Image: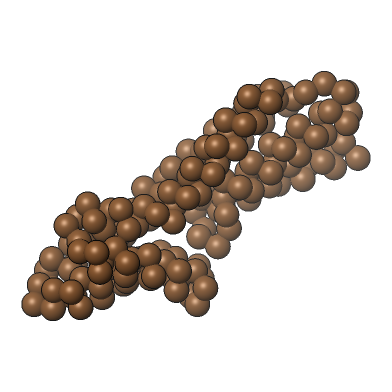
Length: 164
């Protein structure tokens, strides 16, 4: 039973890394569940803790922060690139529409299209500015994916370190 839990934990950790790239999978939460399964398998098999409570709480906080950042960052970056409130709202709405209607590519292109449309509606004569703002939303996708990849990779590193 313990070997099966460890195997499933590492499958979740690997799925977490895939989720950092593929917008359909929630990468950091999957990796964190993998850490929890390793913790549970260690306690069930030997009665000792694999990870400390502090370690698990810190990684829970990091997982929550990175997951929230992934949804909020496109709006923030849109604003940072000079976008209006309409572009920020469009970026967020584009993200939501992309998640539900056009996964997985909609999550990548949704914020870009939403920010572009929002800025064009707000400043209809400024196509170049709207494109710059939309590129900010698109850049947010890459920053968010990079952060998720780092977090998921570190969780896998700690899991491997603790097992071997």
